[in-house]
Length: 83
Image 1: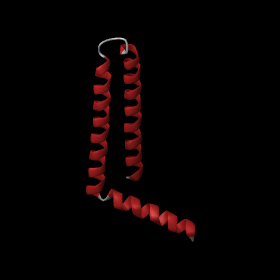
Image 2: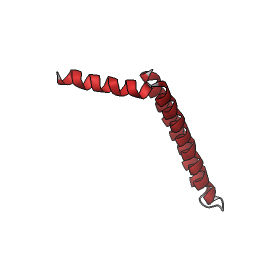
Image 3: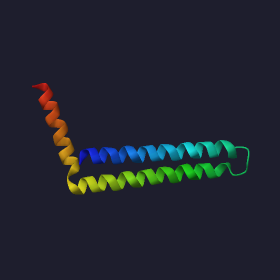
């Protein structure tokens, strides 16, 4: 379950990065035009989308008890390394 969450988070991060790169390329092309303000709105939408995905993931993880198991696993590993 933990590996699924990590893969899901990394996939979302890669998608956001790709979208941001596309938006950067568009912003460079549009810099000389009157549509320069549109890039700012696109960035805001990308950030809102990423925040929405993160909130949904966090809500799901909290509801399913995954966060507690994650913390338990981390603490168990730390204790195991100390011994």
